[in-house]
Length: 85
Image (tube, rainbow, N blue to C red; front, top):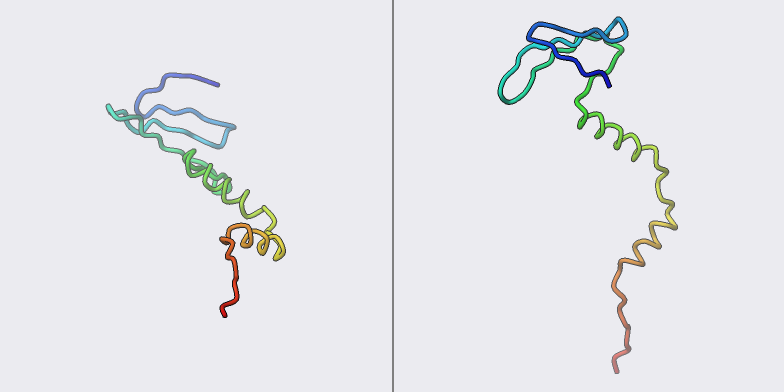
């Protein structure tokens, strides 16, 4: 991990195509601006992780009808049937 100090309006260049600029510094945090080609996706970590989880869920094969029926049977309370006379 590269750790550097930058001041407002200073930047770093990544891979010759991505520029990260320090836009402002406040007591609450640092504001960064990111200039990147349109084909490069830029996300906050929590958004990236949510997208990755959604992609993993979409790639999981759906349960078969047999598996769904077994799941329903396992979650349905057992009812004892009696004949009334």
